Amino acid sequence: MHAKKLALMIREMALDKKAEEPLVLDVAKLSNIGRYFLLTHGNSDRQVRAIAENIIDKMKEAGVPVWHVEGLEEGRWVLLDYGSVIAHIFHRATREFYALERLWGEAKRL
Image (cartoon, rainbow, N blue to C red; front, side, top):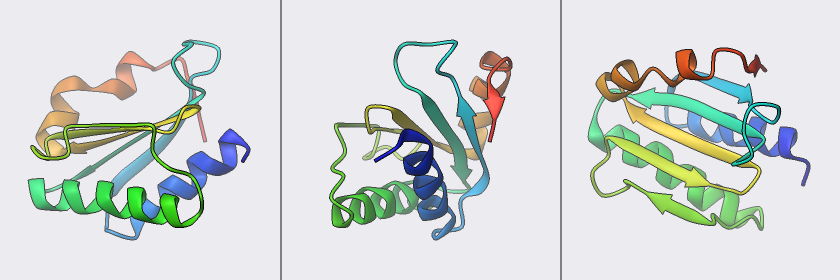
């Protein structure tokens, strides 16, 4: 599956669980760890986990298993690695603290 399409699918899956302020960044020219980053957040640990679990489940149904998962139990910052797309699902305060939008400020926004 094309990376851009995958990133946009993951964004929609996050929105299914009321993810807030989802942002897809094209980081291909800035990093070799992925082509696209999804940045979004929830307002509680439970919501962060629900967003991540929904993405994992729906991607698996679509035949795209996650390569690596970090932070799911804590629900503060969950990282889902799909190779060319890396989803970062934050708790609101954690997203504000790390401000990855600024760190990757040169990336094109989709």
